[in-house]
Amino acid sequence: MKNTRVYKMPFASVYPHYIAKAEKKGRTKAEVDEIIFWLTGYNAEKLQEIIDNKADFETFFAEASLNPNVSKITGVICGYRVEEIEDKLMQQIRYLDKLIDELAKGKTIDNILRK
Image (cartoon, rainbow, N blue to C red):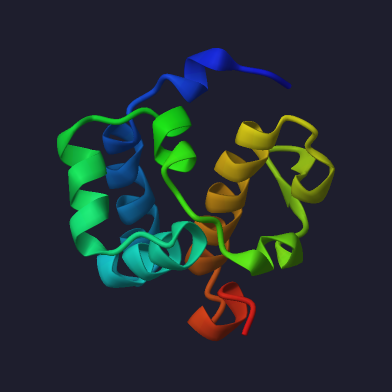
């Protein structure tokens, strides 16, 4: 499942799609950001730096401090069980996809953030 094209894709090019997906379902940019902060350990300034520098997903996750509860993110996204994805970076990308998907499906923030 290795797709190096995705790894080199700028996070900034995908971020607006995460927001649009959430907003289309009545959720907010603030909730998307909260999910990103929880997953990566980033704050608003660091996220803006990543966006401004057009950092790719490889850099986005290399500079992150993943939340210790990521192992609680389970289920299927894009036809793959996230907990079974062997490629570490692809798994991290799919963790984020899964959390944004849960937001768009109406889950509460507490459930999404595995509280």
